[in-house]
Length: 303
Length: 299
Image (cartoon, rainbow over all chains, first blue to last red; front, side, top):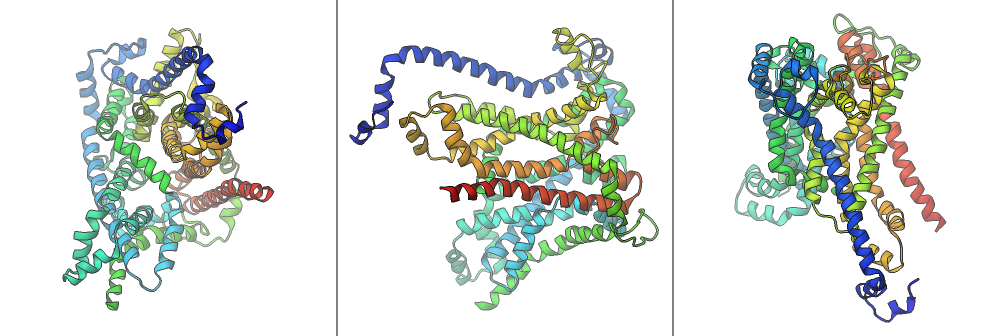
């Protein structure tokens, strides 16, 4: 046990640690490096498990159907172009790519701009019913998306916008969570005196929002935009319900279609289709990983 | 200056117009449909609580309820244990581990991939006769006969749980790590001086201080887990095979509405699901914070 009186006699923790460790330092060091090695090995194994399904996918995408049926290797085959041709005969995957990209980019832009606008309105004006509206929005934030699915489908049917991108894009204007996040952010980063100064200079309210508030909010908007984009890109149930024509399918829906189509007969083409849907995201992640990881951390701690 | 405040309404107007049309109205309309026998076309007749009575007695819904919980529960337990172990390894001040940002990125990668692609990928990797997983396992001699993963209820559910774990443990790890790095090092120094070992430090300092973060992970994971749809839909035939074991609540909702045209009943399923989510979120919240209050009183 450690002698309490030592702590009281102004011994720093570092000194204390050194003193107690001196006799067995060599042994501990050796043991520690062995343990460290084992831990690193386990970490690398976990990393391999995370990556191996993707590796299998990439390898199999280059092999012919017959080769895949007879066994598994990690040596790439030569049937890449053949697989590509077979797949394109049935499904134009780039079209799905284009649709997903159009929808996700527009959703991200709309969410970013209108959430910033709403957050600014909530943060810097006082008006009747403000608190009620804000709390109501927070309550609605807890409601899962599937709750209104049937009503949403009926609404789109009555408005005649089924099988269009409108129901997938326009609702992005109202994103309660992003509004909530941005309001918290701007309340701590933008001082009201800055707005007052702009008013005295004769700027209009909307101009103040565009030239003063937006630049200050930009880091938070960017953080939220990443998640908005990923969420929209990966959304499956909404486009599945809304879209009927093959040429309008988004990538996730097209993936589902691929499974039920002729392409499923040829495993090589199937793997290639999946690979094409996955690889661009992986490349984007390569450049953005640090930013994304930091955003997740920030989002969680702010909660 | 006072009249400027009316601009507030103008700023929040676009949000509320779209929110009313595309969010609140559909939720209300679904609520109305849940009391009707609407079938997607023709007129909706009000039938009172008949849909809800049917829901409680519906063995498929009850089955879907338990399936969803089983699949989510196994996945969550695994995911949180792995995340905590990883966080323990990387936050240990005595064994300074390197490569945190590298491992964090690799562990997070599966979470970024479109779920439908993941489902398709595992659907063919887990294939009974031609799947690469069985081939690899047989090559290294772990199994002698190919296992029909997706054709037996237990292995099918376990497969979905493990895929979910694979997708989400990296995310939980990042969040836990963010929580751990927010804990003041003073606590750990004090523990070191008092001679606490690693396990004591972890259970007496790290875990209690991580409670809010763990609660956040649990509730977000629970809400997401109860909405499990993409994976079971695309892994097998889309109606919950084998033997109804992959029939989850949202999959049941989707099939009732868009496959069998039972819109009224599907609306009741949606509200049933909603009530369940609210109840269980409240229980999780209470059990984690209720304890704290009790403990505080004891002290």
